[in-house]
Amino acid sequence: MKPLSLLSLLALAACAVPQPDASTPRTVAGVDLQRYAGTWHEAARFPQSFQDSARLRCEETTATYTPRLDGKLDVLNSCANALVEGRPRREVRGTAYAVEGSNNARLRVSFFGPFYGDYWVIGLDPDYRWAVVGTPDRNSLWFLSRQARMAPADFAAAEAVARREGFDLSRLQVAA
Image (tube, rainbow, N blue to C red; front, side):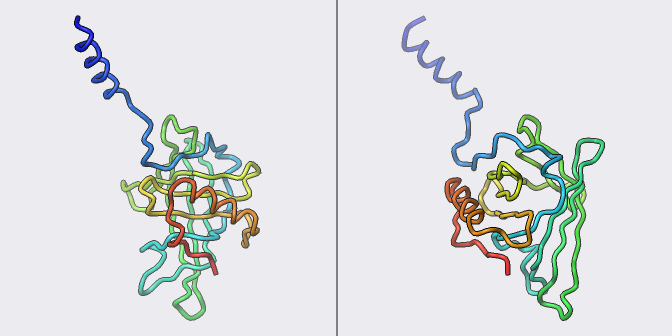
């Protein structure tokens, strides 16, 4: 085989091997779902149509994750609707499962039947006090905290993670 043909064949073979996609954010190395379970408070987010609309402005938002026997998670998202007198709470229930091979850092979450969305943990405090969650297209981002108010140093660390992974923080809404 001629050297040029061999080189062309090797180059073509390299294209067939899955390469890391530098256009998507990196996730953490792994997530212990037992430690991740429980209630998280939203400290900041990118605006989302299901949280911000003409009839809904979610505040005091929480997400509660409960491990199931089948390895999936039950998800309960709750928020106070700041646009309605008395600020009634709204809830939505869903399920999540870990993407195979992601060491639980990439989840798929569904609130509506067979429709799943990405939930990538791109930042996580070693003590599970805060987390940064985003989507591969960088159109969704949440800063989560175990406390109702995220400590300023933790918020700065979350911002640094999001910035490093290419999220446009000019869109970030800090929780009221």
